[in-house]
Length: 219
Ligand SMILES: Cc1cc2nc3c(=O)[nH]c(=O)nc-3n(C[C@H](O)[C@H](O)[C@H](O)COP(=O)(O)O)c2cc1C
Image (cartoon, rainbow, N blue to C red; front, side, top):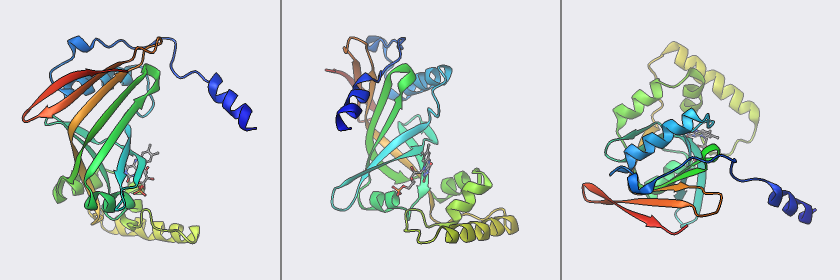
């Protein structure tokens, strides 16, 4: 069983036959411009949910935890935004240690983008605006405010969901107090382009004061 699973894994292709090209020597001076270029190319190539990213944090004992979140925005200062509940596991972890890593993987173009930096809440007004822009079901789920707690009985979720929806219907401007928009201010952004000969191209940007420096990495 273990053997055949290993064979199955080994037989699976990793990259498509046609891969995107990346000329690192012609890359822009800042990683946000390149991120937006790559994002648009991922959208053109029909990469599903290209705005989803793995967000990694650590708990108080330094144990890492990762989960997928939606990227809400990227600003010109080099911050990547996501939204979640400050009382969730990730919210508590970020309060204790703001250092985070974000990973985008776009298989259809053989590209990975890795970002490291500190996460901080953007502010109550931005969190409220993000909350109100969410669909009713998403708002109801956030209003329940128990993300990552133990659910003893799934019927409790149905009840809580119904109550939260009723509260939103009665007061459409209602905002979940713990809903938070975070910005991860990148210190390091790496662009990774797959190559069939395994001569992958890696370009890493590092923040140096107000500007960015760039260097190539061995694959
Ligand atoms: C595609 C996708 C998008 C998601 N987007 C979000 C999001 O934007 N915010 C969020 O809090 N959870 C989102 N989740 C759920 C998280 O992955 C995670 O289950 C949840 O936030 C609890 O994480 P935690 O226990 O580490 O706090 C998403 C999951 C998937 C698969």
